[in-house]
Image 1 (cartoon, rainbow, N blue to C red):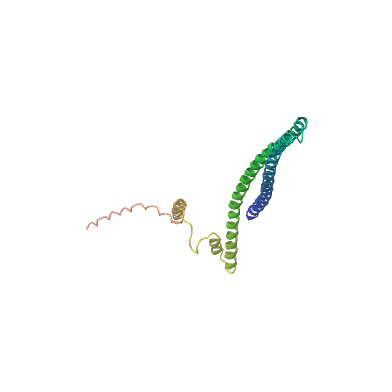
Image 2: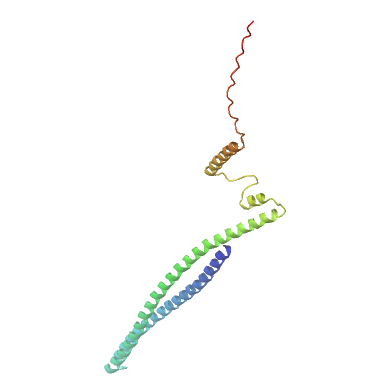
Length: 205
């Protein structure tokens, strides 16, 4: 029995370690995605600032309207690409958060089962150790009743009391005793018929 429980505990331990590794990897992945989101947000601000620079160059007549329009189109395309990347990153962050929650629940469940099975295993080991200690102590005692009582956890001379069984045993003993008394008792002699006294003849003088 202890071998089965120990195998189960070892299996649960290995599964728990694997789930811990997956949870740690998913957490690092989510952290990286959140960092990428911050970078993209900064990039969006930088791209938006370019529009003001283009307008300033146009006001200072460093560029004409055609160049200003072309520059703003290029800035808009860059902004669209970055915004698409932001949407993708946000979706990945949501997926990573769901994965983390699922793995965390799995780790908790496996840990709970592991703790229960490990408690059973430790209890079984303690019972086995006590059993082995009792066997060693009683190694020199050849009395089978003493060994049996010790292994069953009862003090010497003490037997479990079962009222129903005791009544059945008493009834069986009483019936057996009655049958034995009937068999061993000597048969009663038959009654002898009463003897009739002889009438004495009176002597005639």
